[in-house]
Image (cartoon, rainbow, N blue to C red; front, side, top):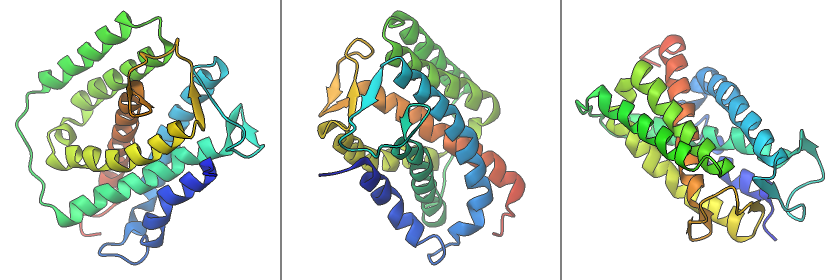
Length: 227
């Protein structure tokens, strides 16, 4: 039987093993990494507590330990640590191995994307998970277009998103196909990619993007370019 804790373990094991001995020294980025995990993770954990308490989704206790924090299994809390740890490792590999390119995409394009997400969220305001996932993407595009538009124009950012979505598809499929996580059908569109609700793709996009945006904010301030 696949447990949620086992999935958390598999998410982090590879980057953890190579944090101290790899082509680059990942451990030298721990300070901005943990700052991002704390700030962004706290926000998403609070979101998780909200939606779990009102029944947008819930966890099958056959696959989690009998220990929770504000209604969340400890495995779910660990998810917000293991995922950014692994995904920022993906990003730093891209930085090391791939030459970046920036596209001169107008800032208004990203602002418009944010507006589109707001409109879609309002249209589906009766579906609690749908509106939150739409508004989280809108908030990301508004904030990043104002303070981190260079990241949006970076080829590495979009490669980071695409590559991070590969393990997301695997692990989220395992979470939803084994029914570790159940979704309230009234809170979502009902459209699924394999067994994954479509809203999860937007949820993960905003989460991964916020983790990277905050990480890069602190990295620029705390890490020397030669590190």
